[in-house]
Amino acid sequence: MSAESLSLRQSYVDALIACAAKRDDFVVLDADAMGATFVDRFTDRFPERHVRCGIAEQNMIGMAAGIATTGLIPVANATAVSVGLRALEQFRTSVCLANRNVKLVVSHVGIDSGEDSAAAAIEDLGALGSIPNLTILSPSDDVEMHAMVRWMLDHDGPVYLRTGRSPVPRVLAENHVHAAGRWPTVREGDDVTLVGVGITVHLMVEAAERLAREGVSAQVIAASSFKPTDGEHFAARAGRTSAVVTMEDHNVRGGLASRVSELLAWHHPMPVESIGLEDRFPANGSAAGLFEHHGITVEHAIERARRALERGGVQATR
Image (cartoon, helix red, strand yellow):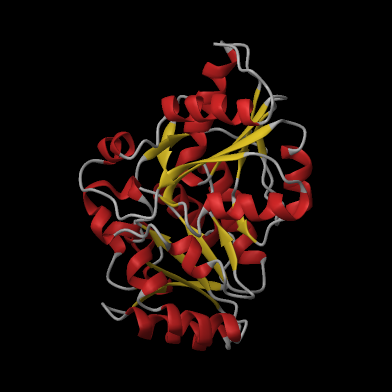
């Protein structure tokens, strides 16, 4: 992993600014959350390409759907709860049902939101994951964020892109290219597969490095293209090992644990252990404190990997 760390919302705005310097076919909308989403850094550079919608998320989605009919690409920004849940009906009907070319980018996902966790989405993957026509992206570092923003603007159809608050180290190669529906392999391994999403991927990499010192070879996969997913490709990768462990700072019901279990049930049944919020709302505190409190840690990943291997018929070395 790279020592350099950037928050995913910083990487998002950096990527958006880089794209705006090369193309003029998109505009940015926000629902009075520029500071939370970091969109203010974009509007400082391109004020003429910014549409301020006020605290009216449902209206912003309707505006975005209308702008999409003109040929311009609307990139709407807000916190995940305020738009992905409050404006869910408008997004489903005006954007996804109509298959409009609207991009919805959200901050404050999962308990990474720290002291804002009461207003953060720990259920957005489940709520939006069942909507047809929608692509859901959750990058793991700055490299993947840049690749996904470029892909998102080239893709014709609704996209829901998740960012993040805390700095994360780089886990993917600088020349990484986003492949639609594919979950990239961050680290090769033969014994157990560790799957993370968003900010948890680097924790799984650290867990794999520590497991290697115990003689356990752990593969790390990033569930970046949460929907749609090439399930056969993922199952073929996971099937090279004996068991799977998932980690997310989201509700495991409807989140990554559910998604991985579903894909493996269809393509390659095998033991799955999950780490995340066990169908509960988070406590309140710093991001680091919340991760520790809810057991979303490297240590817990190592313990679950050992348990998963035992379920898969492999005795882990300790």
